[in-house]
Amino acid sequence: MEADRTVDCVGLYCPMPIVKTSQEIRELKDGEVLEIVADDPGIRSDMPAWCAKTGHEFLGIEERDGEYHVFVRKKEG
Image 1 (tube, rainbow, N blue to C red):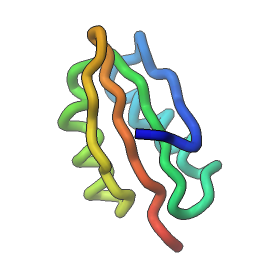
Image 2 (spheres, rainbow, N blue to C red):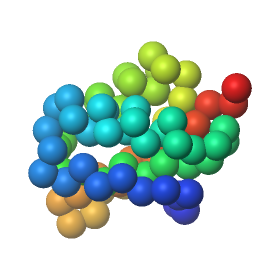
Image 3 (cartoon, rainbow, N blue to C red):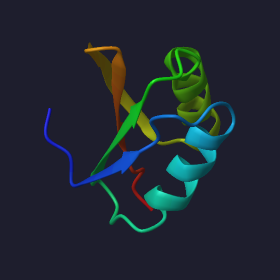
């Protein structure tokens, strides 16, 4: 999946990946995709829950070499 911006959260643990995602997504235009790279396994449940709460679209997660690549599309409006 291709992202418009990537935020590196490797080495950060709950709640910091969500905090950094919240900060970064504000900088995107509506409909753009943010990739979050993290090594905290909690992101697998935290990010879908955060998206459900905020209205952003959870696009999926890929696991590569012990890192989680999470993709979120910024909500319209």
